[in-house]
Image 1 (cartoon, rainbow, N blue to C red):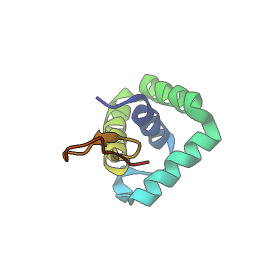
Image 2 (image 1 turned 180 degrees about the vertical axis):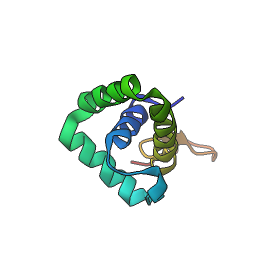
Image 3 (image 1 turned 30 degrees about the horizontal axis):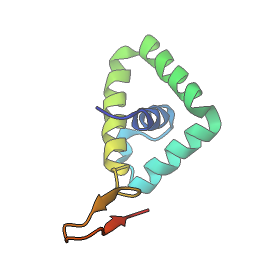
Image 4 (image 1 turned 180 degrees about the horizontal axis):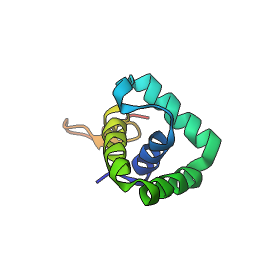
Length: 97
């Protein structure tokens, strides 16, 4: 299940002008998400998505599936900020930040 940020990004991509038929590159997806957030904010994106589901549910479902898939591909989780113990004996802890 996507986290809250992934859902917000998918909503932002959903309301952008980018079309699935364009097969956008990762940089285009990131730009579209950023522009939608700047233009509408996260709540505005969610409101537009809700409106589209109310007006055109048959189209909105397919577009949201595409948006979620794109976001999960483009914004893959990283290990930044994760601390883990070294397997070597001793008090060594490595953190990536």
